[in-house]
Length: 299
Image (cartoon, rainbow, N blue to C red; front, side, top):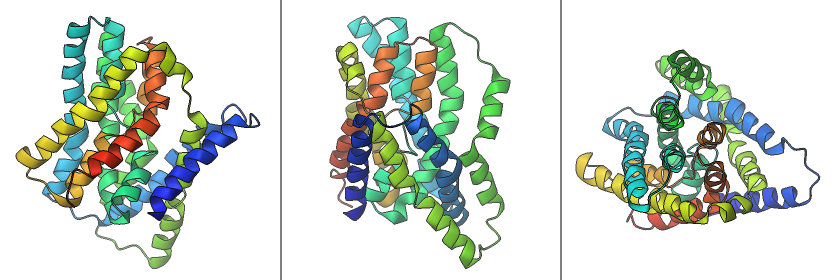
C-alpha cells in the first residue's frame, strides 16, 4: 500500500511542480536521463544478477513481442474498419505496441505486486527495449516510407545503459556481490520510483487528447483492453504460467506507451497529436487499468 501511495503522491507532486511554471523546460527529460543512466541500471544489475533463470523468464522475455505482434495486427484491422490513414495506423502500431515498462512499469509492478516482482519486471523491460529497437523501428520506417538503418539499431541497443547492465549482471552471476555492493545498488535503485513518477506527473497534458480524441480512444482500447486479454490468454494457455510471472507480464502489458517510441512517431510524422496524447494522458489511464487487471488474478 505504501508503494502505491508513493506512486500517486509523486505523480501529483510532479503535476503540481509543472503548474507552478518555475521549472526549467528540460526538467522531465533531465529526470528521465537520471533514471535511465543511474536508477534503472542499478536495479537491473542487482536483480538480474540473482534472478533464477527458468521457463518463467522465457515467458517474461516473450511478453513484449506478443504485445507488439498483437498490436500490429489489431492496428491494421482497426485501420481497415475505421478507414484510418497510414500514419495513424503506424502510430498505433509503434506507440501502442511498446510500453513504458521502466519509468512507469517498475514502480507500478512494485506497488501492485510487491518488491519481489521487480526482477521479473526488469526482464520484461529489457525485452521491451529490444522489441522497440528492432520491430518498432522497422514498423516506423515502413509506415513513414523510409529505410531501416541496421547499424544504427545495433548502436542504439549496445549504447543503452540498462542493456549494458543486463550483460554485466549475467556475466557476473557466478560471483556473489559483497553486502556493501548490494546496499549501494539498493539505495540507487530506490531513487527510481520517486524520480520517475515526478517526471511523469510533470509531463502530463490533456491538450494532445483533444486534438486526437477518437483515435486516442481506439489506441487506449487496444492497449488496455484487447492486448492485455491476449497476453493473459497466452500466459495461461500457451506458456502455462501463473503467480508472479503472469501477474507481472499482465501489469507490464497495460503500461502506457514507451516515451522513445512516441518521440520516434512524432519525428517521423506518424500522427504526432495522437502520439502525444497516448504518451501523456495514457499514463493515468494505464495505471488505473493495471490496477483493474491485477484484480482479475487471484494471486
